[in-house]
View 1 (cartoon, rainbow, N blue to C red):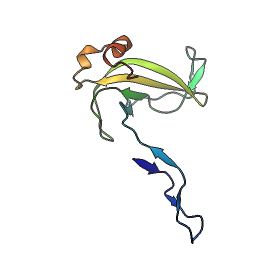
View 2: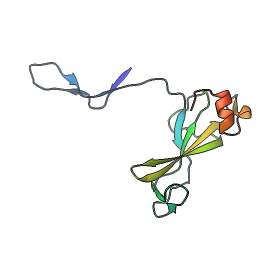
View 3: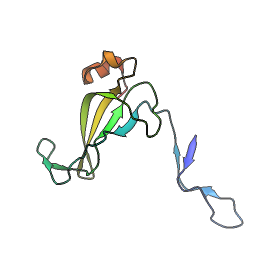
Length: 122
């Protein structure tokens, strides 16, 4: 499937439109969302991550279970680990988690378990 961000762009009235930009959509093996009522403070430097300041957003979550969540759906998750990312100079934490409703949730408790039960998954 191909999705255009700009739609059909007409160059000349006598010519057919062209695709300005497209993105191929593939099967993504995780859900991406946020932890409600969390916030990465842009005024607080994190001494453990190069003194980077928060990105002024909620904390992001990458949920690795087998079910695809619907947009806006709220999942109960088990945190497994965290990734500290620097994005345009700002600290942007990503929590790796699994839905408590996932059949493999009882098998994974930390990032070492993720490697065992989800090889090449993260």
